[in-house]
Length: 116
Image (cartoon, rainbow, N blue to C red; front, top):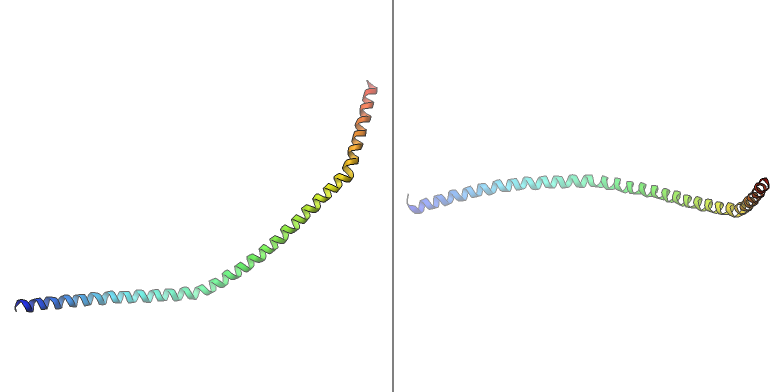
């Protein structure tokens, strides 16, 4: 065996090792692509029910928010009515009560002065 034959034998062995290495890498890459495809398929299958649930939850939340808006409007109306009632009470009864109080204070002041 001369040097050229030995060099070609080494090159053939190196090429065979390289081919085996590439086959192993390609097999692993093929498994990875298959696993990724399965994962994407499963995610797509479970994504549709999840989106449907999310849509239903959003609808229910919007319904509850509408109820809360209605309650808030009713509270504002009740507060406005109560404020108006208090103002009416103060205007119609408060003035005369102040006058009665002034009269009572004057009368008690006069009674107190007569006792002394």
